[in-house]
Length: 130
Image (cartoon, rainbow, N blue to C red; front, side, top):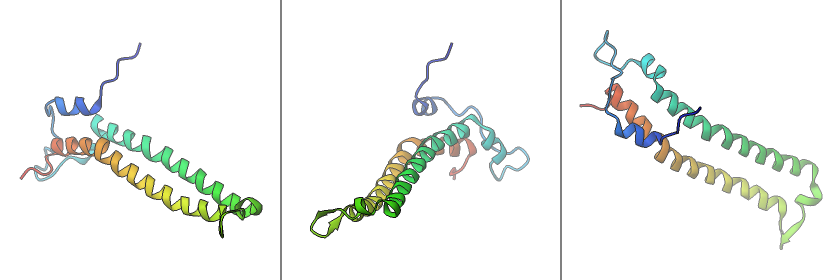
């Protein structure tokens, strides 16, 4: 049987800081090894990978399709759509548009999904307490 999945954002904000990532040998800084081994950091890395790898693969496929069409489908890419604007020009400009869309999507994803987890890890590590 599997356990029901709870929202990590609600879970991380609701629970108190049970442990802190302060190195007992050196009170001046966080214990980076403990942070790296923590479930909070693993969850953060997993969330990042779940966005970055599929988005990178999708963009790479889109770019390769554009490059292959440019190299081998001259008739298709030179088809005039409006005046002197052809399919190749539109698809080339779409590369820029898709890059901007990916950047904006990542920015939104990071703000909503990653930043709360980073703040939680910073709290546990004692970073920013002054």
